Image (tube, rainbow, N blue to C red; front, top):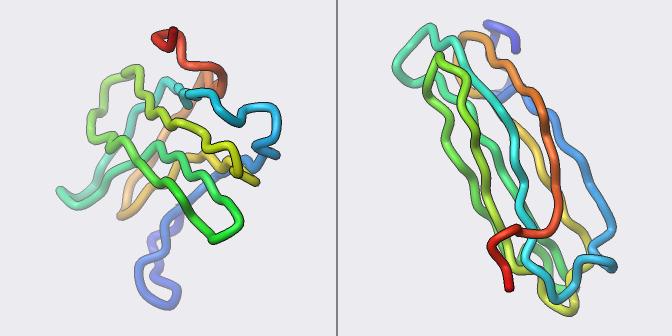
Length: 112
């Protein structure tokens, strides 16, 4: 994450894209351990999950991360039968630093 603005406020971000075929009809959860060191009150991290299909984005959800203490974070999505891609990632907005560990994407353990 840089302290400079490029064309407005640009987050530092990492993401992974996967084919949704094997996850269709299931509920998946993106989990990670994370913490941030915020320089300003507006600095924060986001663990996010997006599902796309033939018409574009069908689902988008994020989990805000604002603590300087390590914590477990997750966000889940039901994957439609026509889903094409699942994207998950972490973004950090504002000055400061972020740490991310033990990232996983898999079936939601609470699903029947």
